[in-house]
Length: 112
Length: 114
Image (cartoon, rainbow over all chains, first blue to last red; front, side, top):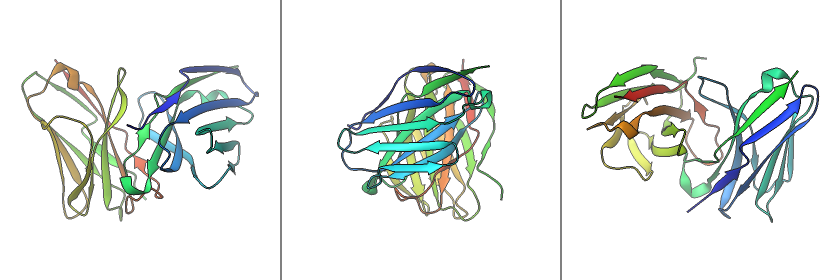
C-alpha cells in the first residue's frame, strides 16, 4: 500500500530556516499537502502542491517536489517560536476521493 | 465562516460500551472524512462520506461505522469499545472531496476508553 515517511524531529534556532522532508511511494499521488498540528488542536492546512509542479511558494513557506525521487520538502524561512508544532505531509490521488495518507509527522522545535 | 465543528471535544467511555461522535462540516461542504490519530499508528483514514454515501473506507473493523445526513453533518459510531480505540478522532470537510480540494479539519474528539 501507499507509504509516507518523515523524520521524527527537527530542532532549529529562531530566525534560521527549517527544512522538513517527506518521501512517498505512491506513484499515482496527485496532490501533496503539508499540515501543521499544535498541541491539543486539529490539523491546519499550510499548503499543497499538484504533482506536475516542482515548487510552490507562499510567504515564508516553500514547497519543493521531486517527483522522480518521490521527495517533498517544506522550507520555513525565518522560523519563529510560534512555528513549533508537528508537521505532517500527506498525499492523495485522483481516484481516492478525499482520502489522505499521512506521514508520521515531524516535530519542529524552535529555540529562542 | 464557521469552521469544522466536532462534538464532544472529550469523552470517557468504558470497555464494551458504544460511542457516537458528531461532525458538522463547513457550510457548503459536501464531503466529510474521518481519521483516527494515535501515538502508535499515527493518522489513519477511517471513511469518507459524500452526499450521504460512503465513498471510501479505510482498514478498520466493522465496529467502526458512520453516516452522513442530508445537511452534510456526519456521525461516526464505535461499538463494543476496546482500550485500543482510545484516540483523537478527527473529521475533515471539503467542498466535493476530490484529490484537488482542500480538506479542513476540526479540533477533534479525544476518546478515552477505560
